[in-house]
Image: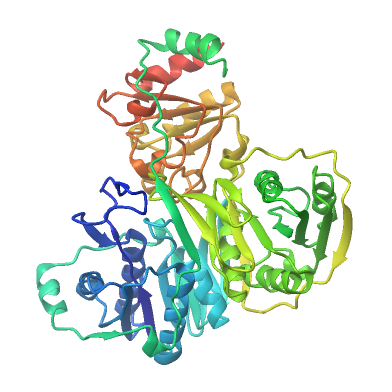
Length: 249
Length: 312
C-alpha cells in the first residue's frame, strides 16, 4: 500500500524567533530551517510501516517555496521513496495545504496519509483534520500508536484525559503525536542516496487548487516579557512569601 | 450575527473550558447558542442552559454520540450551521475541540483560527504562534468564522444565572468512519490540570515515576493538580495527559510550581501566563528562573519534603 507523508519546512525549534521591525511577520531570513519535528515522526512511522512490509511505497510531499526541496531530501534520506514539491511563493494556510494534499491523494491514491499533528511555526493543528474532511476519510489524530491489519487501522490517540483507541477503515488520515515513535537520524550514505531519488515539482494551478489565503495577518508582536528572576534563600522564606506577599496559599 | 458554541462535555457535565469559550462568544457579540451533542446528555444540556448569556441550547442526543468521533460531531455541526445561518462556530481548544473544529471548517470551506486569546472584533482575533513567542493578529475574510478558544485567554462565564431554552435537534446519521474501542483515562484524586488553582509540575530532574510521589504529597497538601514537562512524559515518569507546553496542555493557575524543570521555551509556552511562578531547581542557570517570581536553588529531594512539612 502507498503511504503519503506531508512534511513542512519550519524555523528550527531551537531558534529564538524575532519579529520583523515593521511588525508584518516573523524574520525567517538567515535562520536555521528544519523539518517540522512532528513531521519527522510522521516520516518515521511511514518508514517503519515499510520495514514491516505494510507499506510498499512512501511519497513525501511538501508545499511552499523551492527551498522545501531540502526538507524533502531529508525525508528521502530517512526512507521515503520519492518526493513531490508543490511549489508556490504564496503564503500557504492549512486549508490551502489540505486542498493541495487532497488533489495529490486523488492522483496518487494512497491508503494512508500521515502528517504531523501540528507545525511548530503557526501552531495551527489543522491540516490533517481538514484533509480528512475534504477526502471524506476517517481521521486518527494525535496518534501515539498505530497498528494496521488489512484494511483497518487501530489508532491509540492522546486525549485530554489519557488515551483513546479508535478503529478506522482505510484509506485514512493519521496525525502524529510526540509518543508515536522516536525518529531515526539520517545516515550519511542515505543522505547521498537521497540525492538520486526522484523529486517532482508541480504548481498549485496544475493541481487545480486555489491557494489564496483566507486569513490576513494584520500584525505580529512579541508578548510583554514576564518580570521574573526573584530568588528565595530557603523553604521557610518561600512559604512566607507565598502566604504573605503573593497570598496564593 | 449568531454564534454556535460546541460544548466539550462528558454527557453529565460541561468541561470547564466551555465556560471560557462562552465568554469569547460574548466578546464577539450577537446571540449565543450552545450545542451539546452526546448520548443521554440531558444533564450537560441543562448545565449549558444555566450559563449566563446563553440564549439557546441545541441538544443532540443519539447512541452513536456516546463516544463521539470527530467525523460524527462534524457532520452534525455542519448540518446545524448550514440550516441555522450561523456566522461563528466556537469550540474550546481542548483535545476534543482541536480534533473537530478543523474538520468542520474544511467541510464549510472556510479557514479555522486556532487558539485565540483575544477577540478584537467579530472578524479579528489574536493568537499565539511559535510556542507563544509571538502574538499574531489575524482577520478572517470568510463568511463563517470557525475558531478554537484558548481557555486561559478568557474568564469563565458564570455557570448559573442563565435560562436558555433547550431544544432537541436530530443528529446526522453515523458516518461509520470511526469507532471508539477503548479508553485509558487517568483516575486521579487531584484536581483537573487545566482548571486547577495550583499546579505542581515535575521535569526530568524528578528522575523517576516513583519520585513523582514526592510531588503528589505536596500536591495533596495544596490541593494542587499535577503536571509535567515533555521530558518527564517521554521518560515515562507520568502519562501523556500530564504534559504542559506548546503541544500539550496550556495552564494559567494562580500558582505554578516547576520542580526539576529547566524551562525550555516549549514548556514555558504552556505555563508562562500563570499568576505566580515558583521554580525549584538545583541548576542556578536554569532558564526557568528568568520567569519565576520565586526561585529556589536547591535539591528537590530535600526541598520538596521540607516544603510539604512546612505546610503543616
